[in-house]
Image (tube, rainbow, N blue to C red):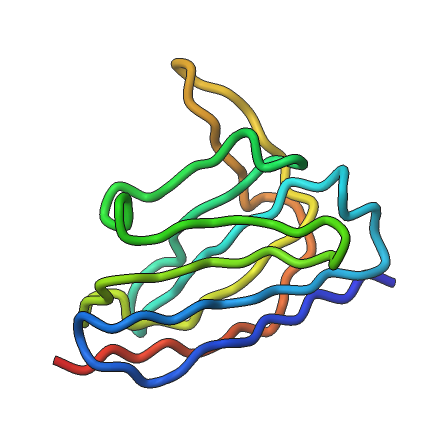
Length: 128
């Protein structure tokens, strides 16, 4: 049974930083593409970032590029999302997904949310 657990969400002021963590167990973690998605109230879920098995390929949503950094520690079965210069529009529930399907398009790396194992989410609230 695969378990995915996120942590690190909090209330922070605009311009602040948070680091989200996600631990996944019950799968071959060091083979798995991992990703972070978010959903704000009244909005569709969107892919924020994803990372391939060894960290050599990453994807970022345009609005978080240069502010967020995804990384992973395969020895700890954990993926991280460092979020800097947070903005009120980053407010959302952030979900970690494990064992995503990944593909290349136009030379860029993407992860699909169509498959994978999902955590329960962690709330990030950014006040202005």
